[in-house]
Image (cartoon, rainbow, N blue to C red):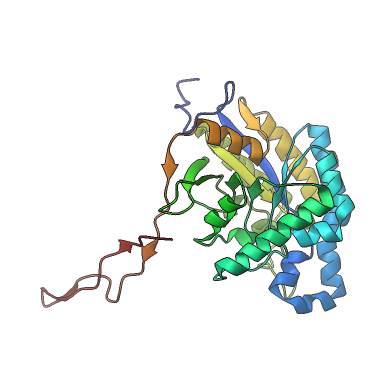
Length: 318
Ligand SMILES: [Zn+2]
């Protein structure tokens, strides 16, 4: 450690000062169909999504093999059923498969019962198609509900990677009154290719398709900063987005740059989660707040307080 490098924010295995994971969400058609089932009638839009499993995944697997990097692929159950050989090729190449919903369902506001059904159907599909029992979960759209962690723990999951509140992995209690915990490996929208490249008329995107050089620079800056502070860098790519030729080429250059950072542990989220579960003693809880009644702050009129709302308070149960 040099004078410029403070102690890492997290205790990594011997010989490492930070961690980096390349993750791929193999959404294919599922995210479009969950958003609007009528999209199934749009042949060109469906072909844009199928580019991922048909063309991009084999290309990305070749890059990962060349670079000798193991990655984590989050696969919706529907994608596994539509492209069984593709999913099995990921497994055969030694990569990790994680759970990513069944049809990449919209999670916001859904009931515990509905979410449990989606989880179970996704688990069944991954097991039937590829013999996989995933230990990791990534919520579709990174949209966790307060009841999600307990559902994951009930099903034996080790970790989640959908929350956005950390620079390093941590353990957290699945509910305020629960003795069970999960590992969280946080993500960040700045490290997601959707924001850089995703565009399809009438479906998604800002209309700005960034240069792969710009995306690579943005992501490498974050990797270098995480390397400096000893955190965990998690890149989220979607094959149908980042498997296009110049983007895949830039991704391979990025992999080379990240691997070259001294002491960077480039590995799967499962490896990061197992290390965290084995070595991290502290277990966090997530505060859930009740929205204060209006008005939120004391009202001053002519210098006197004439009214006030309730103070923020934590809810007792999730
Ligand atoms: Zn997704």
